[in-house]
Amino acid sequence: MPAGKGRGEPNAGRTCVRKTMAMLCRLREVPRHLLVCEKSNFSHEKSRHRHLVETHYHNYRVSFLIPECGILSKELKDLVMDSGPYYLVKDLPLHELIAHEFISTFVKKGACYALTYNTNIDEDNTVALLPNGKLILSLDKDTYEETGLQGRPSQYSGRKTMKFIVSIDLMDLSSKLDSKKYKRVSWAFKEKKPLKFDFLLAWHQTGAEGSTMMSYFSNYRIQERQPKIALSTVTDLPCPVLRSGELRGEPEAACSAQELFEWLGAVFSNAELNNEPDNFISTYCCPQPSTVVAKAYLCTITGFILPEKIHLLLEQLCRYFDEPKLAPWVTLSVQGFADSPVSWRENEHGFRKGGEHLYNFVVFSNRDYWLQLAVGADDDCPP
Image (cartoon, rainbow, N blue to C red; front, side, top):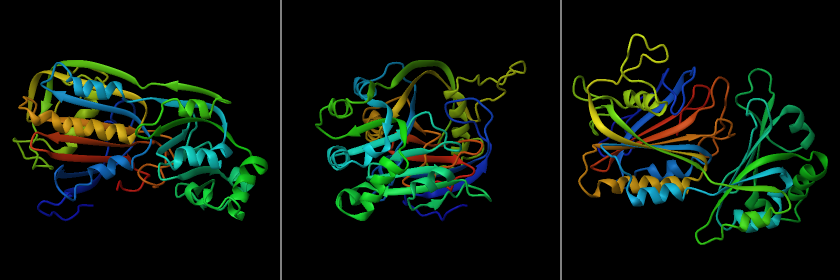
């Protein structure tokens, strides 16, 4: 569904298409996806890059690729190494997340994120806490009815509704501790239908002590974790030729955003790009026109990664071009948890054949950027 072009507008050239494509960061059979592509400039007053990063809450993997680079700068490496911590809390009762003390300590004094761990969105009950204080529950029919809470049918239930979505505003709830609503929710989680989950938790507040969450949940089995970091240099890498102003590409002159997206999927999957006839894993090759770069630096961070950390990485990648570089562009790719109940903002996320929701920035030396957003074909078109 193409949108209108407007000179200097942040979504100029925006398109939404369905197509089979290589999934970023992994090789497997992939269903069709919805892909949105747009272009803008970081200095444009209506650029929405920050908003898109901040409202993609639950991030599992972050990767960036820098062509013509053999050694990572100290500034970038420091940011990569400071991408944690996060916490895993085992068998945490759900009522702990609606406790007044928890809301006062974490939700009201920073950005608090939580996501159920090792739960499947299409089969199990799943829960997510958003930094705006919304607690989102995706419940099966029996659990939903037993809690007695008010919600709505999942839009991915099919003909027979088997999943329900409940949204609880913790900020509103904590301001009325004596209200019938708070007492009803508290009773539902403590007595009527006690629910326990393994949770991933992270909290962002400038100047806060890192041990605050460890001490708060000391009565439960809590582990502090750091993201896994993989750094590598790829040699003799065929790279597509891009022009920042040509989102759809130009025959024999520049590749399109969609071709780049597929190429990145192959690179992050460590696929061969030479289209050898005896290669039974991949016959993919780099789109044309292309150029071979002697070295490219690839970094992948895996864990529970906060939007605030990703935004700092994006800012530093923009500064990469403050001094002249051989690289014409760099990329930053972010993949969300497949089983998160939301994708962007409070948009319900489905799974069906695939639970992808991800975005990719292509940053050019003139501060232009391409933004690509993708979700599974059963989800709504990305924002």
